[in-house]
Length: 437
Image (tube, rainbow, N blue to C red; front, side):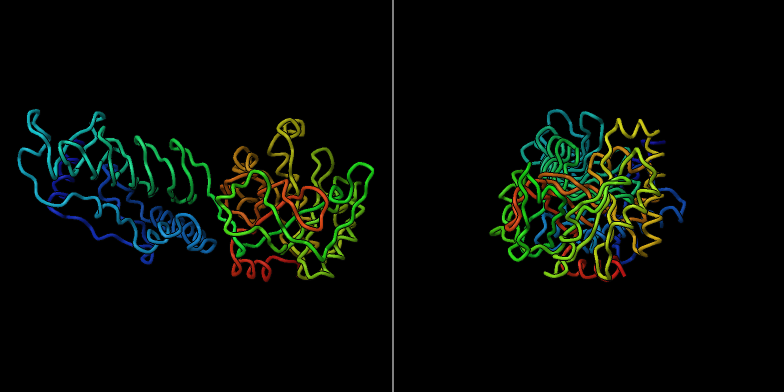
């Protein structure tokens, strides 16, 4: 019966009986009629999947522009759906000798074959070598270029019956180089290596929104004390891990926001907070305050300590909770669930008192290891992710800490550098809707 279904679909393909591609303007995902695992008949579930994929695409397009790697590919897919099936479907007609290949006959033109894994390929051959075509397996449909071993190599797409779609570069049947994958849960556009997503490579330009975060360490080096020359503040170097190939022009960026450490635990204060906070306002720089979270102390007491020692004005950046526990510290306090309950307590108190949603600062490893255990926090709050180096964090986020050793004119020593996830339009919206009222 399974083989019969495959044959029926092949006949439909050969006859040109293809459904018209749908687009996201119609709130549908591209057609998956070529997959052998047919979609669920649950209309509500399918509609939910389609809507989630649409949201992922909209989120990406709102925060990227034509200067970003792969933007045109993602934008085309969002507008037109999957165009690769029609692009790579071999043209012309079959002759009997090209159906499932007789041993002594060289393949040329449009042929149907099976590869070593018994996957059916409708492909274009030249000199007995597969060039491009459509390959069908039990999970979905590949459309694109092939190598001489009939493995996906070069440009191609893979549409799964569950709605997940990938388009980009392939090598030896694995995603390699640039590509994007979209599913109901995530859109990943960036570099891939041996089927593993590395991340998005950001292009740094003057159009992006940059900021810094500071503490007493920007004022103290051993016994020496340093001031900050607020009139001269400019970012002049992004740090040693940022490739110069990803920088457009000279690094001489204005600073649009500053976060200042205010408190830690239930008793530690930053002695420089008030002066730095006042200087930001005097020099027209958006400013916010953060609290360094302790796993050993009561979260409600920490929240009230932060509120007591910190200043807030209308238009200030949202308060931020800096969460950097080690695995051992999380285990010692009772595990991730206990940690998340403490975080919920802190943000609830601060949000009620300031009428502003706090931002949660964590690193990429924390995201990968723990964050899925707290979907409520992930959905409700903005995140600030620390991930140093070439690749942007793999999560919806507000801010990205890209470097811990940036150089800022007017500040002594290395500085944490950050970039807002979006451009001026999204930044203006963030300032209207998310800052202290």
